[in-house]
Image 1 (cartoon, rainbow, N blue to C red):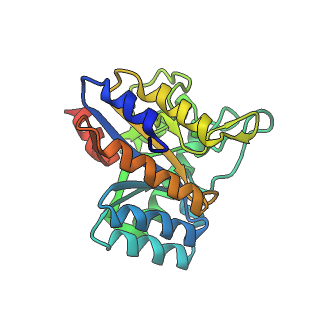
Image 2 (cartoon, rainbow, N blue to C red):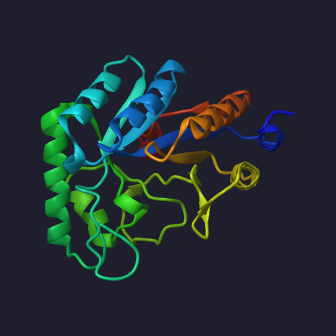
Length: 246
């Protein structure tokens, strides 16, 4: 049985379609690793949504991301905060948290929006992923005012009580418990538990910077396994968001 044989077994039990998307965070950091990971998606003709940190972009970052967008694959980009900077005085790290008001948040988001538009123009998708997957209702209202179509956090995040559409990621590919990365066996158990549901859409969160060759190879094995299921299809975040809006 293959490494992900248990995943195949879980998917074989499904009676309903499953849409999967991949969101890779922290574009602007570790350009070479981003290029390697994203190129794997291009070669496999799979969609990958890259959340880009506007203030982290260097000339090299811009060249790498532009080349990926031009590669004829299914690479898309959207905004990942402004600078991926923690502004909380206490508690968990958050760039758009309770220590900053709506005006401050909206100003930063608008600045990042302008920065990405100046470089990539209309190739930037109207999706907003807050760093650390954390934000407040003020953030949701700010991105609505700025014309974003949806917000992407991690499944199970606090209800913001706002009307903004959400497209959460469900699987953290680099999941940790008590600060330690899951073993392959633990990762498979974690994946099976999340895939063994009747949900119609699952997002997989990636971070290219800490992913080494072995971890990327494991990802390709996982993708090859789920691709064998007739119930599974791969989509971009905007494809799913458009379907939800319709």
